[in-house]
Length: 223
Image (tube, rainbow, N blue to C red; front, side, top):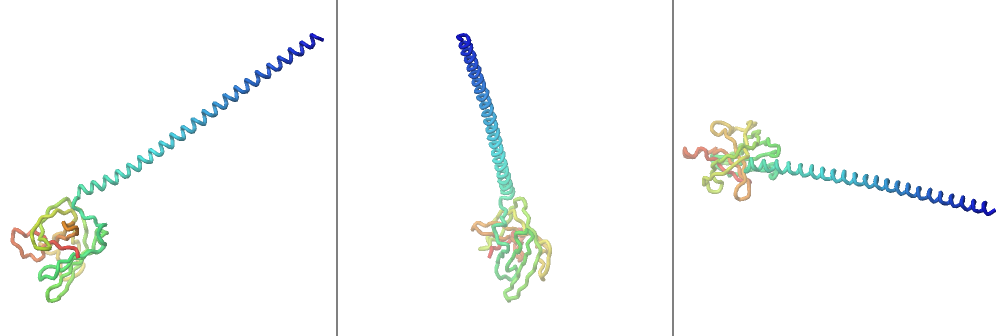
């Protein structure tokens, strides 16, 4: 009986030892699996974070590149045409008024200015109240910086100004006077004056000047 009892005790001990070993192995496997899963999740999160950062950096780089290109284009335009007039700062229709004169137009009106192909109306009003108007299809272009001389609108003093914005009389549409004819077939120029306004330099249609001043144009102020 004692041998049987001892044998039973030894068998029971071996069984318990085996169970304990199985439990420890199971825990080790579970721990390893948990560690592997955690590593995979961390790797995935790290990859997603890196991808997100790269996307954000790429987006910022793209935005910065776009802004830089736009700023560069504006800067290039300013550097190339420093005296050009920004037409978007003007109304779509503007008039430059000279006043009643015997031999010079009274006013110049530019319609559809934003299209850069304005309809130009040159109005002539004589002292005897005779009124006439000539209309032209025009065009506006930017030219390399040019220095011109003008008779100042306020006192006829001759001064020099720099211009980039040129206005051409391309086609005479209607009216008795054709200001494209002869020596007067010259462009006009639009520029910002020292008083903060805008001026139109036109050919001197009156023509009553000395030989050395034949190139001098007439300044007309915006009405």
